[in-house]
Amino acid sequence: MKLFSLGPREIHSFERLADFAAEFRPSAKDLVISIHPIYDRYVAKHAADSPHLLLDDYGSQEPTDEMIDAVLDDARRTPFERIIAIGGGAVMDVAKVVAVAGDSSIDDLIDHIADHHRTVGLVLIPTTCGTGSETTEIAAINRTRLGSKAGISSPEMFADHAVLIPELLEGLPDHVFATSSMDALVHSVESVLSPNATPYTRMFGYAAMRMIVTGYREITFAGPEGSKERRAKRNELLRDFLIASNYAGISFDIGGCAAVHALSYQLGGKYHVPHGESNYAMFTGVLRNYMEIKSDGEIAVLNSYLAGILGCDVADVYDRLEALINRLLPKKALHEYGVTRQDLPIFAHRVITTQQRLMRNCFVPLDEARVLKIFSELY
Ligand SMILES: [Fe+2]
Image 1: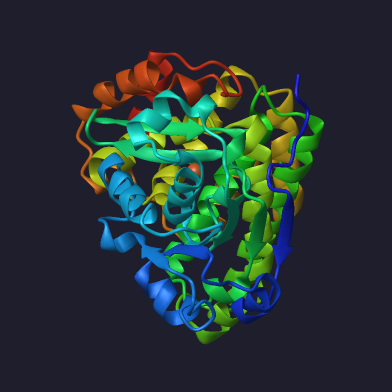
Image 2: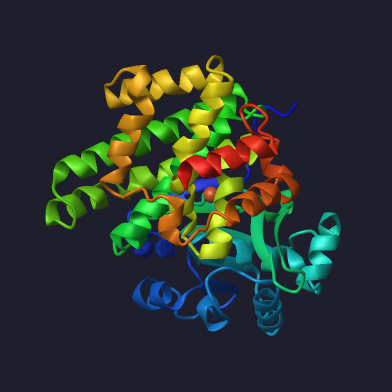
C-alpha cells in the first residue's frame, strides 16, 4: 500500500509573477499555455520571447478531445524544451497532455498512456484556488466524440515545478473564488474520509480544511458581501488558499474524491453548474447520509475537527458549516438549477453505472437506492 508520494519535484511560491520570471527566466525555448485574460494582464510582459497558445482561442474552458487535438497540432509547429502553464484546471490539464503526447492524438494517448514519456519540462502555475491540478497527475477530458468524460492519469504528467503566485488570483470574481475554494474544501473532506487515505495524506487534507474554513470565517467577519474590507481580507489570504488547494490536491491524489464529486457531475454535466458550486449542492447531503449508515470511525474524527474550528457542538457541525459557506456561496436546491423529478432516477443510475472510479472511494458504500434518496433530499 502506497502511503505517500509527492508528485511535483518542487513547489515554489512567489508574491508576484515578476519574481517568478526573474528566477525561471522564460525564453524562446519555452511554450506558454494560458488564456487571454491572464496572458494579456500578467504574462505578456514577463514572457515576451516565449511562443504561446491561448486555450480560449480553441473553444470553451472545459478541454474536449477536439480542442486538444487542435492544440497539439499547433504545439508541434513550435520547438520547445519546457512548458509553462498559467491558468485554471483546464489550462494545466491541457499542458500535462501536451507535455506527454509526442506525436499522438488525444485518443491514441488515452489508449496508450503507459507508453508515453515526458521529454520536456513542465511548470504549472494555478490562477484559481480549487483544482489542485498543479500537484496531481490527472487531466480531465470531455471526449465529445465518444460522448463521455475521461480522467487520464500518468506519473509522467506530474509537474517538475508547481508554482503558487497570489498576485494572479487578485482579480478573481467573488463567485469564482467561492466556487473554486469550495472545490478544494470538498477535495480535502472526501479524501480524508476515503478508505484509501493514509496518515500522510490525511495530514495534508485536514490542514487544507483548517486553512479554508478559518479563511472563510475571517473573510466573512471582515465585512458584508461586496465590501472593500471583505475583498481586502480575501486578497490578504490568497496565499493560504493557494496552499490549501495544493494540500487538498496532495491529499486527493492518493485518497481520491468520492460521492460528492460523482453526484455533482450529474448536475454540472446536464445543467452547466460550475464544478465547485455543484459540489456544494451535494456536499452535506452526502455527509448526512454517511452518518445515517455509520457515525463512528473517520467521520466522527472529521466532525469533531470541524466543530473545533467552528466553535460549535459536534451535533450542529453540518448546519454551522453550511451557514458559514452560505455567506459566500448560497446553497440552492436542485430544482432551482432546473433539475426535474424525472432526472433524479436517471442521475442515480448514472452515478452507479459510470462513476465507480469515484464511488469506490466513499466512506461507506452507497447503492443506487441511497444515491436516489440523497438526490431526492436535495431536490
Ligand atoms: Fe473537484
